[in-house]
Amino acid sequence: MADIFTELFGSDAEELYLLDCMSYIMLFMAGATFLTLLFENVPYGRYASSKYGFPVNVKFAWFVQELPAFVVPLYLVLGTSAAQLSQLPNRLIIAMYFCHYVQRSIIYPFLIRGGKSTPFFSFALAFVFCVYNGYMQIRHLSHFAEYPADWVTHPFFISGAVLWLVGFLINVHSDHILRNLRKPGETGYKIPVGGLFEYVSGANFLGEIVEWCGFALAAHSIQSATFAIFTLIVLSSRAVAHHRWYLEKFEDYPKSRKALIPFVY
Image (cartoon, rainbow, N blue to C red; front, side, top):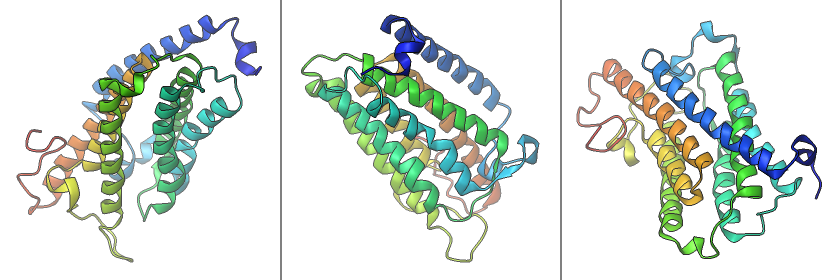
């Protein structure tokens, strides 16, 4: 099937080279983000600030900024020459990706209760990132990634798939707990309880980190690995910031609770 990428690139080798370069750029972005987050929290949610632009409604922001991570890959799968899509490993790994972003871009935004508006700068960056990463992950998986015929029985795939599922369930369950902390009409912040929140302040972040690390293990590519590294840096920083914020705001916050890793950190 002819598609826009046939016209953009002279050969598959050129596009694959671009995808590899995008991965290394994301790795550089991860390093730059790590240094930035030593001095500044990611500016959304409780850390939102007017210096990062005018406020965007939180439900609208989450829906629009995350939607490219679903729409771009959907086009790549349905509207382009997805040469590797007939292979079972590729289909299963792509299904992991879509499961996350159906939940994150289509379901999650409409379940949000209250929440602070998102500064436009954070909203715009998230939108661009979702376009960038959606193309990088799914174009590689649908058109270039090659796996042995027995990859789905390989320990890397099996352990990665299990980690992905565990992380996905932790993430969804933790978001459910956070949404239901307040009763209808209540405002302000409360101490999360239940699930992994009994052990860490960033249970939802831990779930997503585990999820994408599992995805990277199953996909076994530089594209998936750099995304997992980027996710680890951003969300671990946010978990530490949340933990510090809870300790400062609530005198009765459980002192045994860690930031991100139960019993450790």
